[in-house]
Length: 594
Image (cartoon, rainbow, N blue to C red; front, side):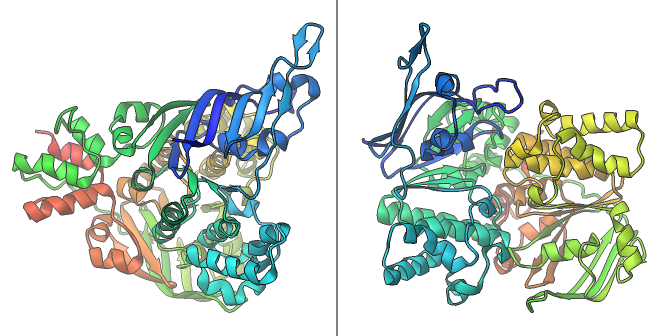
């Protein structure tokens, strides 16, 4: 089988700007992607996945300035894409004083044959309107205007944004919601009809419905056009459903490559390298269900193993929340200056010590509500109080940041210092915390979120996942009474999600009130005591996550999906109606123990 991408003995390290030599980010990598294949790449944050994508694209090293005498110090090896050598280092060239300095060769970036969708779509937009963003790459190719419009329109349709076409000339890309931005960025590349499409966590900011639309688009591109796709992703269900093979990457190397079913039966190997395995796989191995020759990956696999046991499991005790109201919202409405009605009469009460998930598709009003509660947006109409204080009063809103901490979805909207340590120190200094105590808090928080080694680094040079953790840490360190976190786990591996959520759980145990805006249903199932679902600017569900995920009609109405553990519970209930609804792998393991 011919290869669309072939990499041989590749090494890469970034140039240093601080007078110290950086480590190899890609470290002796050998790797190939077959023509027409959807290849998944997963691994922990910092494994080198995004760097590998940039090398395949050719932006690295050809878009950087490597000093003539330092080629061998920064890159070695060969990268071939679509039969062309885009990067090759002739290590024996340029001998000076008996030392071979190496020479960089290759054609560089293959545009438009190879396209890359960035993790953060805002870094990809160049134009002032959606129409011109879609047409920009086509115009560089000299495409005729009529064909340009036709291809741009079809690309929007493919990502589920066809309804924006009539106003595309008047819509600024940055005015779109987070999910719409990512789909618009994908559409801009699809309009170019690339032969190889690299997607770096393209669904990380999307709701479940948006994820489904994007992945179905990817499937059509593969089946209808035979496009080769490299998909970098953390979500095991997406990788399992749509990839021909999956590669595990860590420390700049490919640890293993396998077909999805074989890949996800390697639970210990995956968890060693910070990668999710499936709930049913973890349950089967931890609870001793089945054997090494029949490791389940899908719900139906586990049902076939549990069915012969003929056991009725006991429901686990459910903790009761306190009844002390800390946030009260009544008939809250909010309209943006462009006329968009974001909130249409929200009624909500949150109790002290609640761990609340705020769910809903993109554009449902979650972030608008959260920013009002954090004092960032004015009240609009209706009533909202925090600790009994009326948010319609300006002097109350000014004091809200002392009580409510807010972590933005995009960390670049929040970070502003040139040193990681200082980013966390800033808020603590404003709270008047003395130097010695402040230093201890900073170091502990950085350790929890896995950023201790980057203490002296400029946040600008961190990866997006690392910047996300830093933004969370900068607010968590201040220990606010109420914490609102907007998508804290976007693009994180399971070890980093565990670190962030353990920190939130620690605050929750201190009777802090936590509100998490999220699309991550597994996060909700594993950590939240309550789920609030919004749709079209109103609250459509408010209650126990168990009740939400076990109700197919609510899930369908709100475009949500239940976690694998709940789907297993529902499947077992069809065999034995006495089975309880178990939310996550830990509950299943506890329930299966004798």
